[in-house]
Each structure stands twice: as C-alpha cells, then as structure tokens.
Length: 120
Image 1 (cartoon, rainbow, N blue to C red):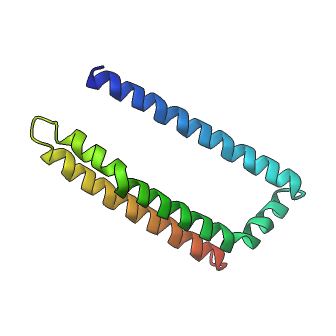
Image 2: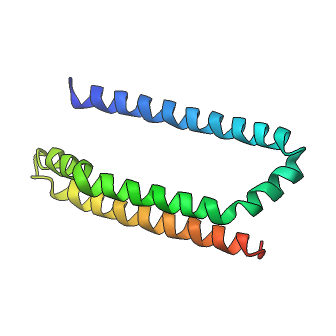
C-alpha cells in the first residue's frame, strides 16, 4: 500500500476514534446527570470524585508513556529513518510533537487542579 493510502487509512481511523470518543463522552454526561438527579448533581459528583479521577488520569499518562517509550517510539523512529533524508526532518518533528504533548498534558492537569481547588 502506498504512503498516500496509509495516510488516508490512518486519517479515517483517527477520525472514527475521535467521533467514538466524543459520543461516549456525551453518553457519559447524559447518563451521569440522569443518575445524579440533574446536571448540578452530576457536577457535585465530579467534584467529590476529583482526587480519584486525578489518580486515574496520572495512571493513564504513565501507561501511555510506558507504551510509547517501550515499543511504539522505536517503530515510529524506524519508519521515519526510511525517508529520503534519513529521517532528519521527521525526527525533529517527532521531538517537537513529543514536547507539545507533554506541555499540553501539564497545562490541562494544572488547569484541572486549579479548577478543583475552587478558583474557576
């Protein structure tokens, strides 16, 4: 399969995964608000569960880092090195992307902590 075909397939998979995630999120809010007696009750439920949810997210981040550093990154680097330039440009982009992901995670979790402490 050509690189163009791989890109189209990857784009389709990413789009479907994003839509499924969005729909599941909407369903969770709907069901949570129904079970908690309304959107206000659901908000209070989320506030009381904030410490447990933080631990959950940190565990997920740790699992993602382990998976990325374990095998996934090696595969991506190997794939990038097959480029015409030996992967120089691709590896630089990969490094920038990794930095951006770490910065995004830190910003999101900092905001979540700030909001949890009642400073919204």
